[in-house]
Length: 290
Image (tube, rainbow, N blue to C red; front, top):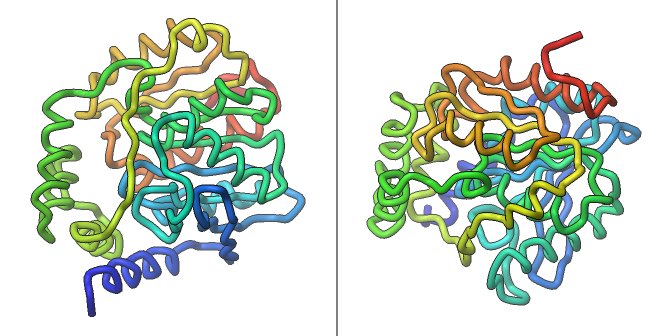
């Protein structure tokens, strides 16, 4: 089995662990075909999930069951990154192209007024889209967002670059172990991480921080979840900056979580936050409160 076939087999194995029936949709965009996994009640309010870089849409296996109980969930493979999206159209040159790509995905799915939830790189894309098209969003969830409020750690970035420049089967898992303190608890997810060592991606764009004035003017109801033990950045500094730059946002720190362990390693606590926020119907509601 070749490297790409091994990666796709591992991808499919994680998807088979999803606890709900899933329908696969390929959405045409000017940048290429975008793979979206769809689940949950057809009349549920739409939630669009954007994964962190290198993890693909299947990363939501521990979260999707809780969300799909009441919401129509759309889990997206990012254009230019690993996964089953095919980047064979217009080039991705920066944030503007990713925003235009996501607009095209939402248009292709016939969606408007969605809750947009992203992790890490996906959170950066989600925030950029919220600043671009706030009227399309009912809410925004940012899980340990990268390069949104504070810059990422140089040490973290160096390890990420070395993992990509010197691919070997053990490197992605070693990076995960360094960041979280342990191997992933789920064997199928461990095997998926191993398979990404030689998987192909076309373009992960540079991630300049958003304009601070635009952030302060953002009116989209937002939940920011900081990972207490994140090594991607200092979690307390990130949370404080989020409160300062998004004064209307709710900012919560997930105890014991690291950057790479959201959303796979302690889903119960995260799922409670997400379900509360998505179901509150109240922009002022604080997750975990009546």
